[in-house]
Length: 120
Image (cartoon, rainbow, N blue to C red; front, side, top):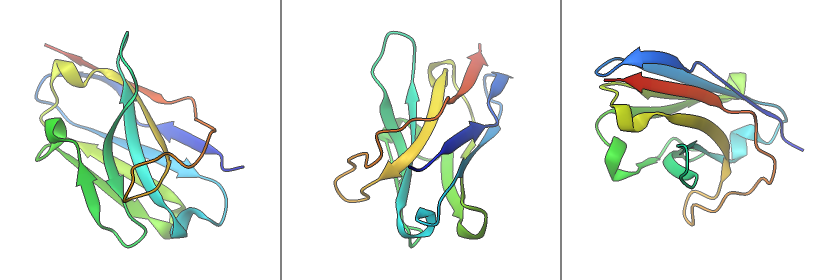
């Protein structure tokens, strides 16, 4: 079972930036696509960004131009750089293994997530 540990969240003013990290255990990290998700209070979890094993990237429209997903296979870590943050970005952010083309989550285990709060 892959273990996922998210970190880097916090409280930031609108327009600010945060960099999230997700450390994954297991040797399968480098051969899998990874995704960043978020879940706001009262809403369903949504995928915001995905990165393939080769570095191709996909984003949901609401974060395009503001968020950047990246990965370091040597460290089994995926990052989410979030700039120009908006109050509507407030959510708990999670990472997980994903099929890059179908965007189906491949791992039933979810980490504890990291809270991002953007004040107006």
